[in-house]
Amino acid sequence: MFISEDLDPEALKNEANIKWKEGNMEEANIIWRQALKECIKYSMRGIPTNKNRDMQISLRLNLSLYHYKKKEYSDCINQCNIIIDNLLNLDEMLQYYDMGDEEENKKENNNNDDDKGDHMDDDKNEPKDDDKGDHMDDDKGDHMDDDKGDHMDDDKNEPKDDDKGDHMDDDKGDHMSDDKNEPKDDDKGDHNYDDKDKSNVNLQEKKYIIKKDILIKIFLRRASSFLCLQEFNKCNEDLGIIKKLENNDAEAAILEKKMIIEKKYYERKQKELYKKMCNSK
Image (cartoon, rainbow, N blue to C red):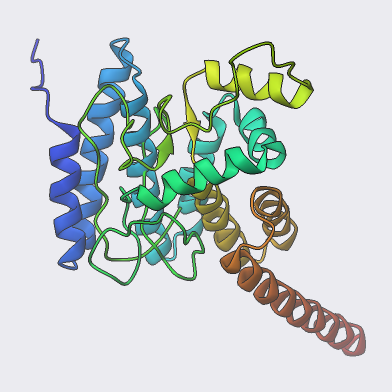
């Protein structure tokens, strides 16, 4: 029985990023998919490290970007769904960022400022330091790292992964996976936790937290695809989640305005069509 040789997912991803940067979308897509297969293969062997998860999310985000650029919006949504569906503690993450203390959020934001993006970020050919844009209109870079896990950023920037450790612990990853990158609760002394703090502690014990900016990116990408498919209600639902994460996100605000305009136009056309059909009888 033939056993395929193990390949380095990160090396494949870097190669694909170069292809994407050079405008070779199809070649980049093929290599990203090969890298994803390698990540899944390692996971099936019982090695679901956080770095492996981060890599898969980054790759799926890149794939979602590819599908978005090809106007394959359903496939783009599927990639985002895979990421979201496999975040088993997603509700806790959303609650964590929604209810977190100001000091904790500042720590998280500081970590984000230091991060170097792992995914294709936008019209630029360089990976961005901040992982902010998610809006599919911006087509900004993607990023995959979860066992199953992707949002679209742009045609250009290269996703970069950290090879250090079993997960993206240093400030280069797109996820807050390590104890260092996570906003920490005050475990010292006789501090009494309220319900919010207990929830945060339980979440941190899982040792896997996606950074707020990456969560926003995933939901923005999916919302943008829903809008392109005129799925206004689903688009609005994702925008609602984004507001809970970051009430003043600029890209979400732009997307919401666009959604409102397109929805009104769509409804007007539907009414005109209905009247035309009635008159034809």
